[in-house]
Amino acid sequence: MKTALGLVGLLLVIAGVIALAAAITFTVVKLTPSRRRDAAPEKS
Image (spheres, rainbow, N blue to C red):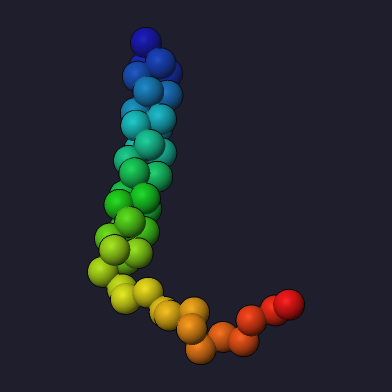
């Protein structure tokens, strides 16, 4: 039983780390201003 609970706990930790990384990435993307593409030369 300890092994099963340990495995479930490990899966929860992994899911938590992935969720935290996704939340940080989402926050950074929303807070940082996007760069305008007008300055870049157009490819033809």
